[in-house]
Image (cartoon, rainbow, N blue to C red; front, side, top):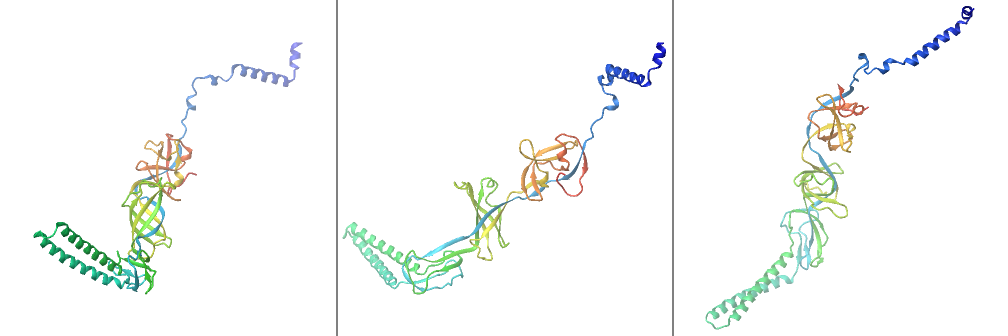
Length: 366
């Protein structure tokens, strides 16, 4: 009877019972492979090294340039002032003409001065004769020593007066203290000039001074004797040398005054013009690369990632010597350097990599 009842059970019930039994056995026994201490030998594999593009670069000599905004001044710029009173009698040099040292620039007329000078010279001759007679009398002890001394003092005073008047006479014909250009004459013929009055201006234009102010961050490499190029707004340039760098910064700006001497062989009138002063700094050995390859390390320093001889990533801190929109010039890399030009952002220092030569010039990460 039971056998007949069992055989009458639907086939679907039988199939469900078998599946339930199999599930119970799987839950009871579990996946024995999960409890094995060691994975199967055929499941262990090392990760493939990351592919990076590299380019080998070598160091080169590079002369960095410190650019300072400044202006040009005449090497010597003197206001000419009258030393004596007089009427303008002649102007031997026209305004704007070049003169040599010692040339007469102006002639003043002082009618009383020649007579005064003649009188002073006559007084000197008289004092000299009286002194000679006093010395003879003193040798014979016919006059006191004090009288002899008074005669000597009178002669000295006479000589000093002649020198003073001769200086005044020379001042009526002022001469050029140096070679240059008589840039301005501000008096006319017949005009009365008073002592101390400015009547002209003399400028030495064979050389110019380039002056500027340098920040305290940039003044360190500057030294006297370095080559300087002054570029003007019209594109012209003057060459010279750095002749002075202040030892103390200005209190209000914390910047340092600098001065360069520039040759102006064509005597161009450039005093007062604005100029860009480019100072050549000492030559350095540098590597050149794209600015996009620069990064900051954990210490906040600029660094570059490259590949060592063991094909592992290296990250070296560098000093940025100069940079523009296309190139960066850095110091601190080994020479030569296998520079990572593509893929540096996918690896970390000491990671092994598979290197592929870069096509063409250096490029940034992509």
